[in-house]
Length: 229
Image 1 (cartoon, rainbow, N blue to C red):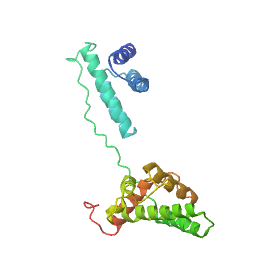
Image 2 (cartoon, rainbow, N blue to C red):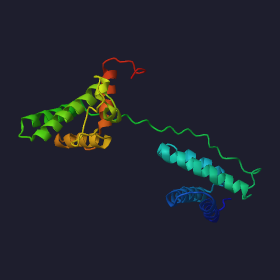
Image 3 (cartoon, rainbow, N blue to C red):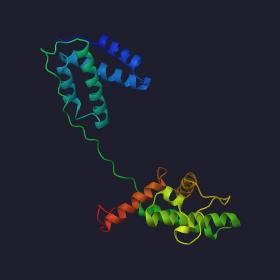
Image 4 (cartoon, one colour):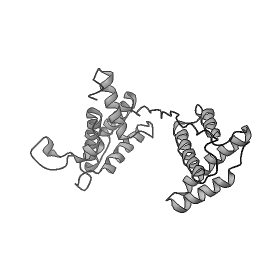
């Protein structure tokens, strides 16, 4: 015989809202998870907490790993609440099995393809033959050097931002400067990359950090030891 735990769900969430620093968005997600569980148990005539085990077993193959992980955490907390409130006789009902493995798939790092890199560089170098003002020509030379450096070394943009002439010559001044003669900011580097990315009409989601992934991918493709990469 099943029991409708709808009222207990409401009471549990009200308690969480009162005594925990929990957002409305999280409460809404908890409510949805628990109502779905309650409906599943009612439809299939499962008693708590065995119904929790049955629910997880039923949906573990179809739910995203992150969603399943959240549901298991919510169900654990609700199960403890029911037990602490003496809303079930633990001696008569088997403790739910939460020993399910959820492996969050590791996404492959995004890269900029060789074709996209070539398009970007071709676009940048083609601007050298256009009628630019002296200041814009200086900026173009800087931009080409910056992008070429990111491609050739795989350094992060914060590392490029921090580079000084002292790193290769005995003089302490930033290598990449903005139009005011100050150190080019990380935001400025991102803007430069976005500018030429859009001019070259390559993927709008591409970022400077993807060049770092590209560099690592090229190293591995050419036989580098993955432990060193």
